[in-house]
Length: 268
Length: 233
Image 1 (spheres, rainbow over the protein chains, first blue to last red):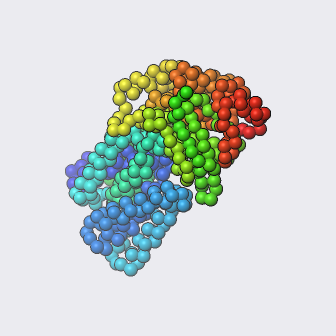
Image 2 (tube, rainbow over the protein chains, first blue to last red):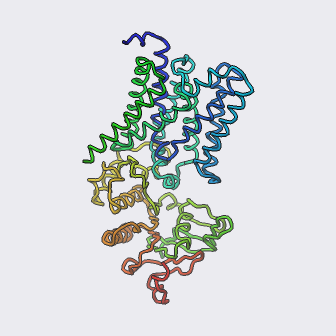
Image 3 (cartoon, one colour):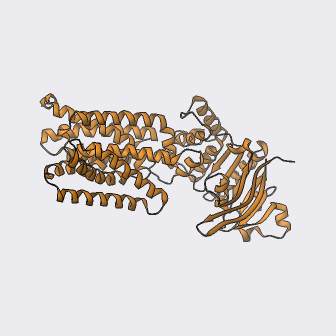
């Protein structure tokens, strides 16, 4: 039953999956509670275009995709802050334009078919050592950033205007958070795919918030949930021979229902 | 003569082509209790947001005594996150108030925590420390937000309609608390209000604003001029 752990590709998948999962869980509460959960979805679409463009030029498309998605994330932030258009509309504009550009490149290029499927539903079992190195570096960077800025990020998330009043450079932190989100999404798209990456950002916070008794506890529970769901999602998908990304999201759905149940029982 | 702590000269705040505040001048002295009154949309909130640097002004100047510049506490109009699913405890919310007095350090220290505990005890809400803020009543929440405004040891306290969501009984005790802070600790208080009860305004200064400053002086002068408070709030 456990022979899967003897396969290098499976161990790589677990390591990359957990690194991405812990990173998304750490970001999760700060994005979801600021009503920016959908930024993950929008940036996943941008990642699609970025990776497609990257594939046209080099073997490791993330080198091109990461800067493209970072620029898109900052553009979305600028549009949101300038109040020219609503935040969700800003995400919609950037993501639909990116998808359109991605599909145009696919239509004029050739040999994309296999990669597109991988990008849509994920191909975590094909991650290589470069993906793992990037994912672990990202995780360490996120832990460092969160560790140093936790109180300020909490203040910005809880009460944006009060954070400004206390002289926190809210725009700077917004941009840094966007950059971390952007890089996480690009690496996540490679593992769980465009359709599912936003679930790794949204589910942990939503589930954790049902049962957490403090914000700090919510962050910790989100991490535990993502680790648990990704590990058992990958193992389950291998045993049941179902797509890994789908297994992870269905597990998340089950965990969410359990947290709702716990909350309901606690309130009675 | 009391020390002047804020000097506002010819202040204009313009949003696109609309002047929310036009050519306003007044001074605030150390220990003043100023009630800012005026109609909805008259510029009350804009005025205090300009004073604390949240809203940039278009013309004129605001001079704050350097000794007081970083010693301002603020209770916003909607001082709390209304998201009932936000899992923040009272203590975590109060930590955001501590950040104001921190320049280099990013962390909450043991002495910060002790200071918060003392304030919670003083305000008789220590038992709420670990509770989720969203689970508290409106009155309890407002008490926590006034502690947040006080946690950085301010010399000036700026409040934007602090009692608008409170029941009359709590409103009364809230104003008694403000008066005590004002008199005992000599803290300057600038309070935007819709409250009509004269009892709360005795001994205070009134700043009546409706785009321009219509009146600035003591409450007693305001009454003597025959201005009916109720018509202007």
